[in-house]
Image (tube, rainbow, N blue to C red; front, side, top):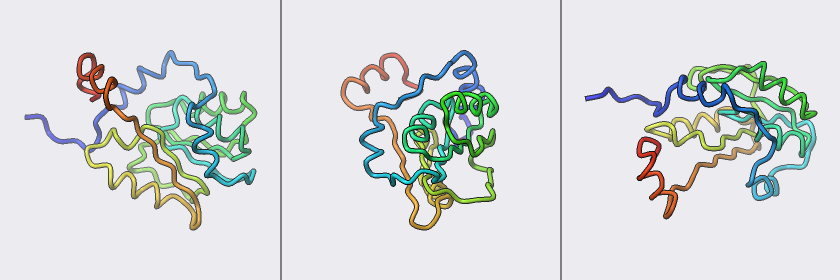
Length: 162
């Protein structure tokens, strides 16, 4: 019997996926989410699981936020370089394990897009999002919906992810 792990994927899994990936800025749900966020340039925007940087770039470039990110399987310098090429105001990208990372600040907006579902027990991960946000700040958490056709496709071709 395999020992239980808090994580459902490994650093190596993500590193292999990002090595040849060149991000293109954009996020299909930007408008749906952005309408609920403040329109105040200069706010700090943290994306947890930020590689390859396209979603972070989209929010920060369009809304004038200062970009912060954390990802354990990325080259933080490469992501920062990409963000600068998209004219994003830079905070810092941390190459750290989110579970042990202890930043010296809190953030105005804390987000993750398809991150919490990679843990067997997502509640402590969700709680950690709220630990990182400033009072009166915003937390945005999204995850994929594997219903209907998506569920069938994953059942047929990628049961581990399902």
